[in-house]
Amino acid sequence: MKKAILISILSVFVLGGCFGQGSSEQEWTSLIYPDKNNTKRSKKHGVFKTIEECRKSSLAELKNLNLEIVGDYQCGLNCKYHEGMKVDICEKLSK
Image (cartoon, rainbow, N blue to C red; front, side, top):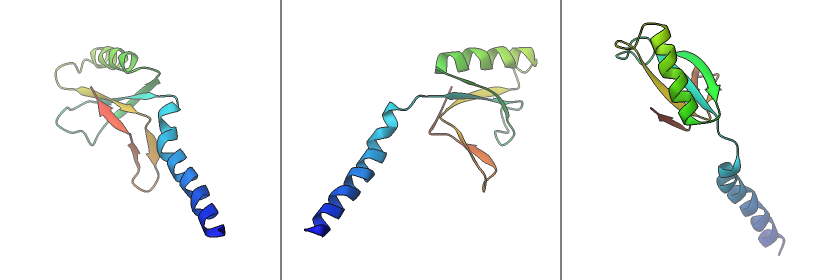
């Protein structure tokens, strides 16, 4: 009986972690690439509430830096800095 209760409680936590992510607030991070052929080098431009805001601001920053032709950008969803890899890890990257 105790084993069944323990498994039930553990299941609630695991499923809550899997399905609870959808309700969290989304943040889109603008990543500017000065050289579109070298995506290892990027500049974090800002964090936005919507992907549309991220796209608009990224394009404006590329224009501001005179990098419209040679540069590129991506918007990352809910990016977190990974200390061990020394890089931002995003749930999704979009343009």
